[in-house]
Image (spheres, rainbow, N blue to C red):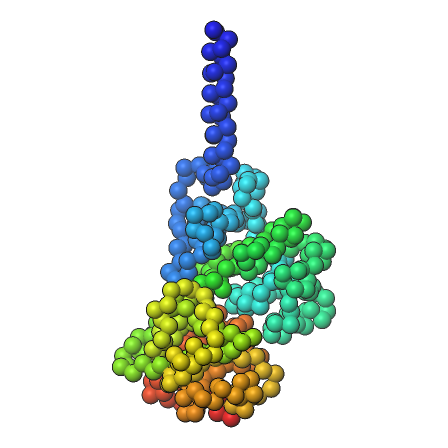
Length: 383
């Protein structure tokens, strides 16, 4: 009887200890910081994908899971050479600044680095053909910055040779970077492209800068950007005119229109337009056929789109893509606003200049607000 009771007690102890160990594994933050509350927390004003908590001279950076808010995101502890060993050897990856060697898998990260003066620390990049920065291109020629190939099929051997402290990657649901993680490389998800507002995307500059201990500079830069952006929206809101818009073009027989909760729909709203699909649920795109788009948007006042064209893009070039485009009222009336991304670098630099992008659109859609304005990213298709 005594022996049986002892076995029951032993089993109960094992269960309790297992539960405790399980809790420790499931909560690495509590395991590292205990009940210590952060001194302060940077909670983004517009972005939804990250936060930065400050504990003395160290910071805890969290990137939320962009597809499932119930799942744990990614955590990083950032500190300097004085950071205690317990922070360096915990379940959470530790990054020591000053950072001297990192990798960028997106051209927008190069733009972020330029903004905070950290280009010299960039030692490897993916897809350099999309990077316009002359300093990086020159260093690529000298092999001072290494080309690791395509972002979703990066050369592991080159990365291991360069040995970056971390790699900024754009996350995807199908986890295209598992081979890099398996090789022991530290990956940081830069989910800025998944934000659904222009200022939300730009605010990721603060997240990016925190790994270099440059977030104070980034916060100051972003504050100026947001103030300029909101000043434009305020000015636009004073006009009673809200022209209707159609956007995009056919791609492989599918016309992708932004859903009502998407980045582009928000941009159109802030620019003072009336967008027919603003009430459609979703943050991505709606795949439609030509007939549906033409039926709903053929009489729109303006047509806004991007195109990647090596030379000067003209109205004839647009008709060569599909002669039916000529039947849209905006084409007939000469009210096409476009960005030739081959030259404008909209996808590379527009993320950090949402105020400029917005002003481009506002000046075109409401010319009385900004007379004699010189466009940067979007302009009228006049040729």
